[in-house]
Image 1 (cartoon, rainbow, N blue to C red):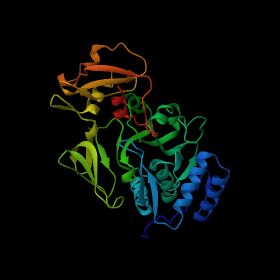
Image 2 (cartoon, rainbow, N blue to C red):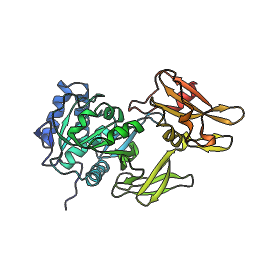
Image 3 (cartoon, helix red, strand yellow):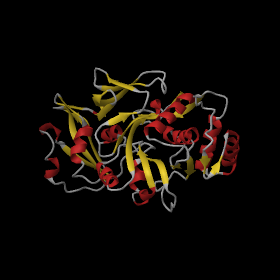
Image 4 (cartoon, one colour):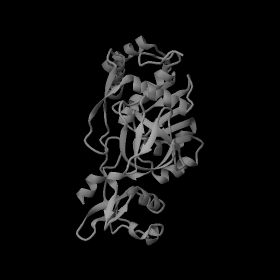
Length: 348
C-alpha cells in the first residue's frame, strides 16, 4: 500500500461542501487570507505553511505548565497522528466533520490535517464558545474543548462522535454528556505528542492508547511515551499514572500539583474528584506555604462565597480535608481554557 505523506490530499476531502485538491486548497487559502475573517486568515496561513516545500511546521504550545513556546514538528508525524486517530475512532472517507477550534494551537491544526488526509467532508465555523448554535447539519465527528461541549448540549443530538480535550472535563459535564446519545471521548495528549495519544469513553476510568504507541512509567510513577511515528524522542511527562496493562492507564494527576503536607503526599486531582459531587462552581485544591506543615492544603472556589455543607468532605481521608477555603471572582486561565493553578495559589 502506498504511503500517505504530507503532500497528499484525499480524493474524498471536502471543505464547506466543495471537493478540493492540493492546488484548489492553496488557491482557497489565498482567498481566506485576503478576504476572510481573522479565524479564516489563520486557516489560510496554516494551509499555505502545510503545502510549502518544508518538511516541518512550527507549533505553539499552550503554556499550561510553563511559558508558551514554539516547537518544530515534522509534517509526516502529524500525518501519522491523523492516521492513528482515523483507526482508533473508525473514521471513514466521506464522514461529515465540524471544525470549530482555533487554528493557532495543535488541536485545531490537526483537525484540518485529519480532514484532508482521511478524506473527511469538513465544515468550518468561527471558533466560538457556542459552535452548534443554528446548526442544522448532522455530523459524524466533532472536536471541542469542555466549554464548547458545555454550551452545545442541546445541539449534540446531531453529533455521532465527539472528542473533548484541551482542558480537564468536569464531573458535572461528564454526567450531562452521558445522558445524550453522542459517543463522547476525553482525550489525553499535548503539543509534543501531536495532540492525543490516548482516549477514554466518558464514564470509564482508563485511557486506551492509539496505535503504534508504547507506554511505561519512570521511577516517579510518571507516564513515559514511546511513539516513534509521532516523536523522535521518548517523552517523559509530569503526569502521575497507574498502568493497567501495556495499552491502558489511569491518570491520577500532575506531579507538579502534588502537595507535601507534613510529610503526607496529597494528589489534588484525586481529592477534587471526591469533592466534585458537592461543589457545583469551578474549584480546585492546592498547597500554600505553612510554617508548621511546610504546605497546607487549601480549597479555591470560583465565584461568590458559598455556605459549604460539611457533608461534602465526608468521602475524604483524614489528611485530604482542606485547611482553608478561598474564593476568587474569576479563575486565571490559559487561552485554551486550562486553569492556571500555580498563579492563583501564589496570588492568595
